[in-house]
Amino acid sequence: MKIGLIAMSGVRAHNEELTRLGLTLPGFVERNKTIASLPSLALLTLAALTPEGHEVEYLEIADSRAGGDPPLDFDLVALSTYSAQIFEAYEVADYYRHHGIPVVMGGPHVTACPEEAKAHCSAVVMGEGELHWARMVADFDKGELQPFYRNDGNGGFDLARAPIPRFDLLDPEKYNRLTVQTTRGCPHRCEFCASSVLLTSGFKVKPPERILAEIRALKEIWDRPFVELADDNSFVNKPLSRELMRRLAGENVRWFAETDLSIARDEELLRLMRDAGCRQVLIGLESPRAVSLDGVELRANWKMKQVEHHQEAVDRIQSHGIRVIGCYVLGLDGDTPDIFGQVYDHARELRLSDVQITFLTAFPGTPVYRRLKEEGRLIRDGAWELCTLFDINFVPRDMTVEELQNGFLWLAEKLYSAEETEIRKSGFKEILRSSPEARRTPRPSSAGHL
Image 1 (cartoon, helix red, strand yellow):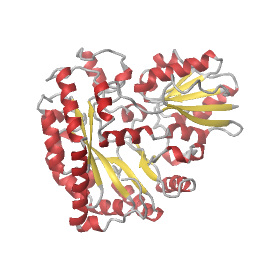
Image 2 (image 1 turned 90 degrees about the vertical axis):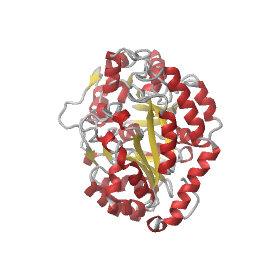
Image 3 (image 1 turned 30 degrees about the horizontal axis):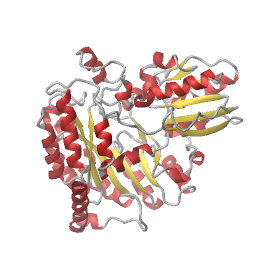
Image 4 (image 1 turned 120 degrees about the vertical axis):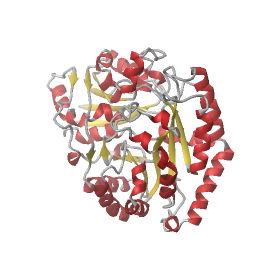
């Protein structure tokens, strides 16, 4: 049996003005290319879990209406996608079912909207796909494919059993970075976060030896891969993180991770990260305003409590030669029309290496989606194509949609102009020259990312 593993790749904003700006703003263009160049780690993992005797092929579809019809030489197709591309994914699923080929769908969106997805596919896998894949393939072989595969609530998948993803299925020339997962989930519960809420009920850590095995598998295909840790919040478990960094230091790889500000309080971890090849971290600052952050993190209001530490934390991280991308979310309750100037000033004051701005987005299945729907503030229920982070799908509380849109565009033009991009690059070079810790940073032996 031949199984087609199909990822819907690339996220395109529907905001035409922002798309136009993206054609000319250096920072924005580079970020879009990075997002679009990541393979589906979930499907590559399922490929590794496929029982013997089954052939698998991995492919990506950027647009279901471009590039000709997808191949039909499959006995079964597995589709993975996010909300922004779900309607295109449904077109692909309908195409295969029209040709008599069963389709299985998984991922955060279908986990949140299983009945909607089931109208377009033969089976829906909810939650962690590793729990169900082998059984589902066996069910298909017996002609007993079930309509829904749900997690049983008993702790989910143990990352100690995680296989090495089938990186060999990828074309090395197609990607500028590859993903490795070291943890799953996040201890914080941010109202707008979809992945941790939907796919796993708790925080999990993959054993260091398995992580190193995956990185070595990458190095067999790419001499010096640039690795993105595919985690919602890396380094939550500080003792295990320090152990991983010590072992990773000998692998000669460069890497990027998403984390929170707590790493700034651990000098030993920062030194180990630097020595292990960390080049950049993305940190969700979300806002410079405590009033906007009030209630964003639902368990302990953790995000709001960090505002007074933003400057100190960013300074300490970047003093070790690790670039900080500060991520801001625009349109939070509490944001008023002056938020855009405040974000611009805040990013400059922090001397961030780079900046990412997105709209607050109501993803299906998230607490913010349920709340905004109850408040009648969704622009259109089910407008999943707007879940790109660069389109507005709700009505802000303390400004109009037009004010949010125009303010965002103004901020994007300011932050991603050639002048501001160069200022950020020069600022980080100055940090490297002035900080003793940064000067100890091992630099890449050849030109590469970041």
